[in-house]
Length: 398
Ligand code: FE2
Image (cartoon, rainbow, N blue to C red; front, side, top):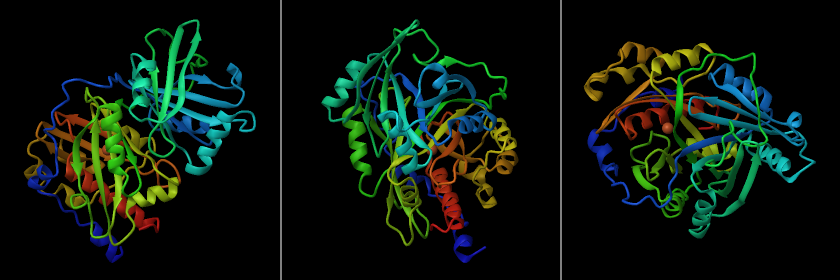
């Protein structure tokens, strides 16, 4: 191991006073929700090969293929696979004929530039027209005007606006729709259906933005979507000898949606956020956290199916009880799997992070189990940061 990596492997924790000093944990919920959102509707990825990507998420992560749209359903230029696990919906979309339409060309261009990536974090709202009008009035840049799609099951209204990079939020209204997902999709009952892995819902989605742009997007979520700043991590809390980052966690009116925004901070070497920005060629979604009720069982299943996770130094588990207090899970089991533990004033949380799920060091997943904790701990954030930096060093990008 090089001196640099050996040094990076020493794990230090911020003290509880550090954590509280940089937190705005007690920020009161707004008395009136100025942009009501029911939850995450779906996350759409633009990918190079949706057939193969869908197989990965089914075989490794336990998603079920439930619907499909493509040439066989009358859509000539692209194909989309709807995957579901409990409340989580992923749509994997690829261009088949970029020469046939602007939509297909946009998908192909997105993949060319970013690799496989998240295009759309779609939000479920009661009234898409009203929500879209409010967002645009408050400064959001429109991508798709409210559009009605209908079939025998009723109609869906969908509209979208831009966020960081080429990412968008669609607003999806389903109150007059009784179908499975959306007009144009055909239900699929595949013979290949691996058991689910216990993933329940999207806990949070993290965006990486350029140096100096974090506060722009914090202000955007605050002003346009009525979110509040739940938590702030500054560059002193999340740093190593070599690099650092800053992060602010934004939460919506009912706290169901959490969007942390990261930006790189200056250091002796390239920040991992810069590495992401280089390889994604711009801002975008860095990771999505998927919640489980039993992280030991879920992570054991995912590992058995080939999902690769980041590891932490064994020193992380030294005197864990002294730092975190009593927890229900056997520490030996957590250490064996590399699961991180942290605490906030309401309880504790268990987290682990996958390696990037594609060749570019861009998108990865987090598996999270909350035991009372509603927020995020600085200790885990720092452990994640250091684990990524070790991998970044191995890739020659530090
Ligand atoms: Fe996270």
